[in-house]
Amino acid sequence: MKVTIVGAGNVGATCADTISYRGIASEVVLLDIKEGFAEGKALDIMQCATNTGFNTKVVGVTNDYSRTANSNVVVITSGIPRKPGMTREELIGINAGIVKTVTQSVLEYSPEAIIVVVSNPMDTMTYLALKSTGLPKNRIIGMGGALDSSRFRTYLSMALDKPANDISAMVIGGHGDTTMIPLTRLASYNGIPVSQFLSEEALQKVAADTMVGGATLTGLLGTSAWYAPGASVAYLVDSILNDQKKMIACSVFVEGEYGQEDICIGVPCIIGKNGVEEIVDIKLNEDEKALFAKSATAVRSMNDALNAILK
Ligand SMILES: NC(=O)c1ccc[n+]([C@@H]2O[C@H](COP(=O)([O-])OP(=O)(O)OC[C@H]3O[C@@H](n4cnc5c(N)ncnc54)[C@H](O)[C@@H]3O)[C@@H](O)[C@H]2O)c1
Ligand SMILES: O=C(O)C[C@H](O)C(=O)O
Image (spheres, rainbow, N blue to C red):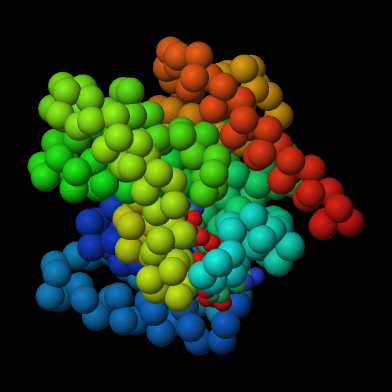
């Protein structure tokens, strides 16, 4: 199976590294616009193979889309990341043009590929990729919920002082500092509601920390995060290529689900070889429904900004 990753920067290269290390694909092509950059990252990753024991072929190319031909999955990480103090939404002006062009280029050589959109503002870029290509909605998946959920589980594990892998929890809604919705009511520690172990105040703090998880890292690092984002993309790609049918919160096009339509927003999805195979309908309570409606309004307003930018 072949995966192309467009953008060999922090997230793209980490994603390539994780996919190779875990043997998720037989070939990974890293493509970047910066001369020699993807070639260098690919060579560096390939030189891990004998120490970590993987056999994935990793190829780096400068803007040569012919080398990406017949990819099963294409991951789009090209675009600028935010700096401390910025929101993801502020990236829309530059990233919209990049994502639109790149998506069209990859489809010329891989018309059957499933596209995973990572560039921010991710929900808006996913909507743009869908609308500008006309691909069926199951083949365009925005990655954000997988990352936000892993942050949520990490903060819960820290509050509980228990292993993150014993915790099950999900974040839905937009991938924004104020739009994501950590579902604290449904989070569990080995099947037991976390509310049995944590006070309401502690749970609210976990939710607040999760929502600004990306901003916190951007403040610490001077640019946005890459290890957990790269690993989250790899997790999603694994579920597609190996038809695992995992339930992962992804930004997908909704047509009535969760009371919304004509936007891409984070909802629980079954992810398999056909991309988005099902949107899972969780019974939200009235408060959660209100939060989802508010999040959708914010996501929709960013989509409206696209038309003006792309004119
Ligand atoms: N959805 C998420 O959960 C999530 C997580 C982390 C980062 N991001 C986003 O992913 C994007 C990349 O982040 P990063 O930290 O890897 O940034 P980065 O600057 O390290 O890498 C971006 C790369 O894209 C390349 N690029 C720019 N235009 C290109 C084009 N037209 N064709 C090919 N390559 C091009 C650049 O040369 C650069 O190497 C940002 O928009 C960031 O906000 C999203
Ligand atoms: O925070 C960012 O801008 C990057 C990414 O969306 C993240 O959540 O790490």
